Length: 118
Image 1 (cartoon, rainbow, N blue to C red):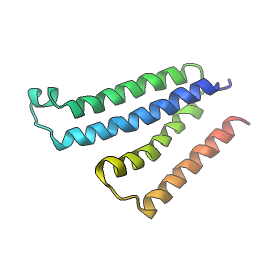
Image 2: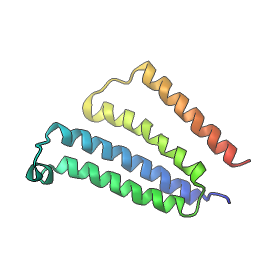
Image 3: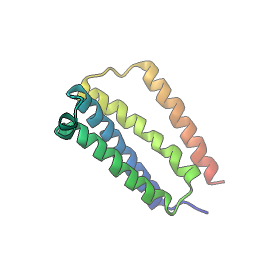
């Protein structure tokens, strides 16, 4: 089975959307009141949950016609976006160790992708 470029695009889009979902969860957690009303009125938390739900829809669409062994590791690209969003939205530092960790993850993803073509 070959994986079409459209499947890769769906999964990559889901990865970006999912990373934005994480931003919403973090922002919403900052204002979280532990009550049904507190959760239902926390628009940032709802946005984060919606982002994760939407990313799942993109992922399902992607794996529909592609190899899950190739596509699922591509979700790790979301770690890059998460690092960027954490800096942009929360002022978190981008350290050398974080960059090195991402490099290791992305090297693994590249090896898996390359192996999927052979």
